[in-house]
Image (cartoon, rainbow, N blue to C red; front, side, top):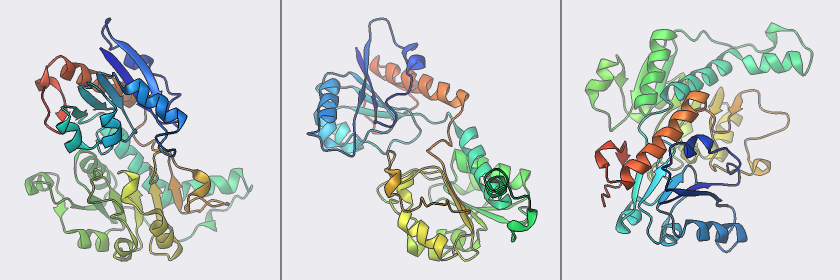
Length: 337
């Protein structure tokens, strides 16, 4: 059995010591980096293709396995994602090659929900800006950031009301006294009702939210879902939070919405690329915007969640490899060897 841990240049230096503890004695393993910003003919990518050629198991976070990479593998049995997301793979083509795409249901619900609320509260209370005033500018003046609103009584509109969205709703509603509404066309209404949350259509959520918090999975249908047209429907000048994948938000449109005052603030946990060129990002300015927080896809991160994602993804892969399909968290494309 050969296991290949696939990374991008931005993540290749991370430790896999925890992952290795779950490998059986007979397994061989390696780490390979794929640079999505270079052509397949580039040396780094040719080395990557050579390394995955005879892999039995791929452990993946951010490398995009489309047809070219899937065709590069001779006998791979599964691509196991170290995430709840699984968009970085062509599910149908992998299935046609007999390769299962598997992922995790839950390992960081708590952390991601906490991060969404923390980011929202930093923007609501100007926490980062007061800190910059004091530590960078040596200014001690509470009145420098007027216009703050009491959070209690504001409406939070949650876009995507799955596990994370529901937990954000519980914190916002029961903890902070916010009214919570949600848009999720795939959610059974009784689940929202049990949470005490009103399901609404997308336009209503956009129009009524004082805070709009995004927690959807990325699909081919919601790439750049948040564009100028979408932002223009946000009538209450909300705070916009994105804990979903970065490709759902068109960065130029987000900049426009901030410039035009359509948004009073934004907090995003990732950019359109998982390996961005920060010198070219339209959202990054000097000095930094006072009403924008950008995190390096760290919303899921804690010692606990990092251990669990490695444990679960390895267990998923090994259970699949040994034919214990009922013990795999989710087989996303239905392949069973």
